[in-house]
Image 1: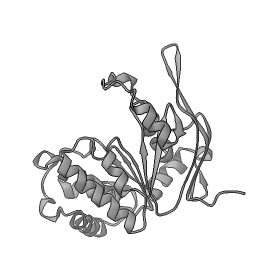
Image 2: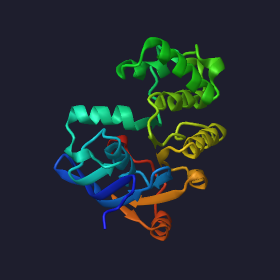
Image 3: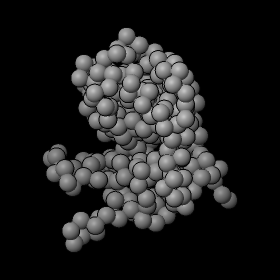
Length: 247
């Protein structure tokens, strides 16, 4: 029987060529994510979790397999279709914020609306409203260098909401934040979930699980049980991988 899940992922595979080696970032992922859920994807560096998120967001193409989001088959879309999909369906939040340093918080939130055919007056009103929603109305005219890490991530959250997407994808959204700021972002994501959005977060932060309706564990490009994940984590060497080896 065909699944009715909002997101349906079947036998998803992604292979990268690094020198003379093939690296299987995703090795056959099967996953259903329900509409309106808050799903946290956990895994060590190199497990494929960010690769999975980028596939889901239409930022990268799979080697084989399929992804359906609300019935849309991403692997069958051309670049124009994927652009429309990203604009209408997805709000992205990144670890490094990805704000434009020369723009104020307000301008950063307004910027993506310029490509969505939204009139200037409406763009401004919507951006002000979203900055109020994330608690930054009094920082609207500040540039990123004048904001704390937590405040920059709140601007990024506001920016992700400009086109009112049904799905929010967040890649390590607390990774560059202190403990308190990270918790505030978790609560903000939880609020978006409670408002009815489907939220998918990739994270190393174990605290994120307390806000999740579902937690997915990835090891070596495959979905594993919590018990398998916990057993494997006891043998991890706490050494940072070189940047070029991260997936």
